[in-house]
Structures are given as C-alpha cells and as structure tokens.
Length: 255
Image (cartoon, rainbow, N blue to C red; front, side, top):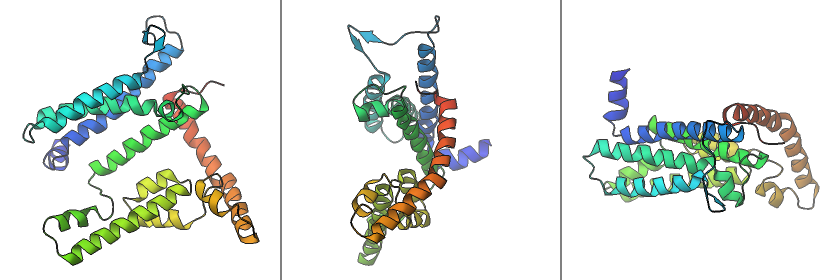
C-alpha cells in the first residue's frame, strides 16, 4: 500500500490534491456532526457563533480559510511540497465548509435544514467524486491534447485539441441543460457517457424541456409525455435512494 501511494500519488505530484481530497471529506463530516449536535441541543457541545444579532455561518470561516490557504499555496515555491500540501489541506477544509452551505449561498437564505438544503450535500458529493477522478489520473477529454499542443504542437494538433474541447464542452452544456448535471460533469471525463446524456430525453423540469417540449405541436408534447414517464419510472426512485443515503450521512431535513 505504501509503495502504491508513493508511486501513484507522491511521485506524480498529486500529494497536495490528495490532501485536498481528504480534507474536503473530513471537513464535511466535522461540519455535519457539529451542526447535528447543535440541532439536537446537546448541552456539552458548542452553539452557533453569533456576533451581536448576526449568526455567523461556517461558510464565512470557509471563505477565510480558502483565501488564506489559496494565496499561500500560490505564493509558495514548487519545491516546498510539504507546505503546499498543508495549504491544500486547509483549502480543502475551507471548501468543505463553503460547500456544506452551498444551498444557503445559492438561495441567499438559511435553508440548511430544509429540503432545499439537500443541494449542499449533492454539491459535496459531486466535488468529492470529481476530485477523486482527477486524483486517479483521469482528465477531461481534450485536456491532454491541449497540453501536448501547448508544448510546441503543430497547427493540426491545435485544431484537434480545440475541436475535442469544443465538442466536450458542448455536449456537457446540453446534458446539464437537460437537467442531468452529475452526468454532464462526470461525462467530461468519459465522452461516451456525455454523448448518451446529451442525446437522450431531457428531464421534464429542466431548461431544455421548457424550451423544447412546451412548444405547440404533437412532437414536443410526445417528448414531454415520455420525459414525465421516465421521470416517474427511473429518476424518482433513484432520487429516493440518494435522498435516503444523504439523510443518513447529513441529517434529515426539518418537516
């Protein structure tokens, strides 16, 4: 195990990324344990941080940690791997705190323990999963071609790099507009998944469905009907499983 870690993580320069990955997971677990204990009014645990009449959310602390560690990591020389790894770990803790309150930032109101707050858990899961893919050495389609072209590539290599990247981003955008955000993000690392996501029906509440399936005519109406059936048959049962798992990890929203 030590040999694999040395070969796959340390020697490839991914130690700071590994520290970030572990810190995001640890920071999210710590944040959720803390908020659940506060919610349960456990007497021996701390309470919410309040300055005057302002409740200071832990996303504020996260932003401060990200700014300090991010600037520090950028300023450190590349040979100071240990310090850069420490900065990445602190950045991961800050990112976890911010992502844990992603729904609050998105909605601009405190929805932490509501159903709307589930999006924060989704954001953390997606961030951890994508970081894990990069940590394992996967790259978005076209990135390696860009790196090769930047190293003195020919015009043909630049054309290939730009074309692959453009196709990848276009498919990802279409997929996410169809309401399949995780598929769009993960598919950037595996273009066949992205192609399938972009080609299949949009989810009925997605922007794509509003633009394309609510127009006059039998064809858009038929597509909308199929999308609704698919939503009930596939997406809702899958969402229930994901929601149950999220509740076990992050806590059930208030009724």
